[in-house]
Image (cartoon, rainbow, N blue to C red; front, side, top):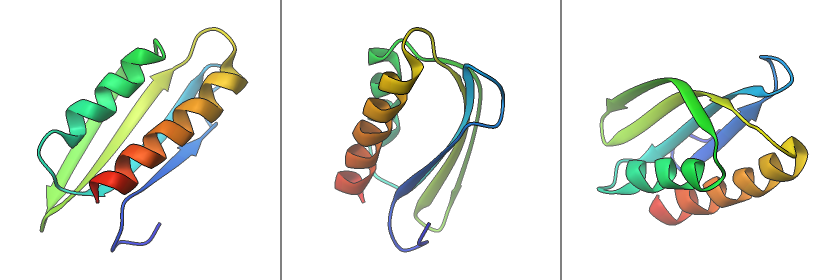
Length: 89
């Protein structure tokens, strides 16, 4: 991920329905809420969240749990989060 722009990194390291999600973006009012709303729209649960802000940038680390058709949800969610972060940067 280029530090000059926003981006997401979604990995499948925690089991069948748990994922690590890292989002890096230029700090902008309301963007974090938009990301949380996107997660809620896909009924994704967030059991763990850590956020760091520094020099006008924000980096958030989520542990998420996905129910239902995970492959479809993950592709759609990844695309939605990417567009949100890119528009916000």
